[in-house]
Length: 334
Image (cartoon, rainbow, N blue to C red; front, side):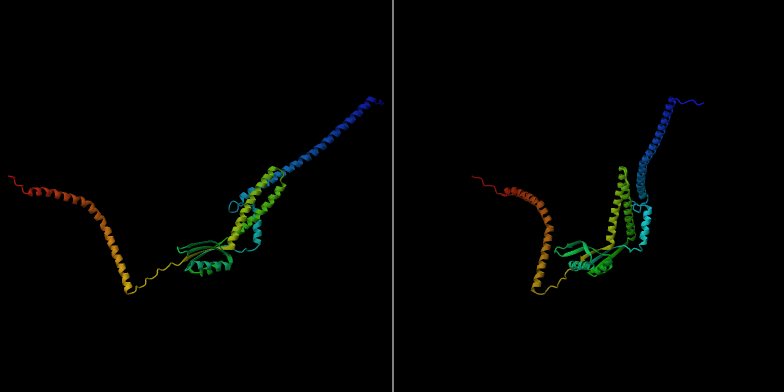
């Protein structure tokens, strides 16, 4: 037998069902919020991880650059970049030898000014230039010595040396050559690698999202750019030295010869000239003797004059008593 439901029981059941629905809805909303919150938190974490990776990559590049130094200790690159650039350099084929040539030529001439002009003509003919010049003159204003520093194309170096040796009388000539092909290749490789490294660092700078990462990347970028500028200066120096050779030319005048004495003419004028020369010789001799005797004469005068005065006084005193005694006595007056 079934007991009928009362209104109170029906209301209680409805409230229980409503409460259950509310609980289920709250749980679902919480789960959804948690999921969305997790996704939103994951994104910042991914960004932080990315930034840390960037910083580690930059720092790693710095460590690689320190550990993979190439020769001079200042220039450093990644080993992979060096290998890649070296492979590309080798694939280009054999490079023409880079030679630095220098020479010195010493010449003597009767007229240094004319010889200097001839040297300038040789330089103009081969397409070179005089980069330094120094001249010295004598008391008459004529050029006595000159020094010229020439820069001529390396391809014309040997021809220029041969031409300069024929300008005047050759005193000495020397040449030296230095092969710097390995330095040129090494510098070119380093420049290429540095440019590639700078391009990568600039990409990292675009991806940096925090001030700390930007500062770290810019520090590395500044360091790489400074090294690149140093390498470019070295490359320009090597290019200048290998394309133009340096020659130093020394010019000196021949020593002047003393004119030979001509034989004297005979006759009155020759005798007069000989007499004057003899008179001059005698005068010089007498003057020499007088100069030698004069000190002794002065000494004799200084010492002899007082002695002579004393002697004269003594003689005068001695003569006075004798004279008085010799006089006759006066007669007595009567």
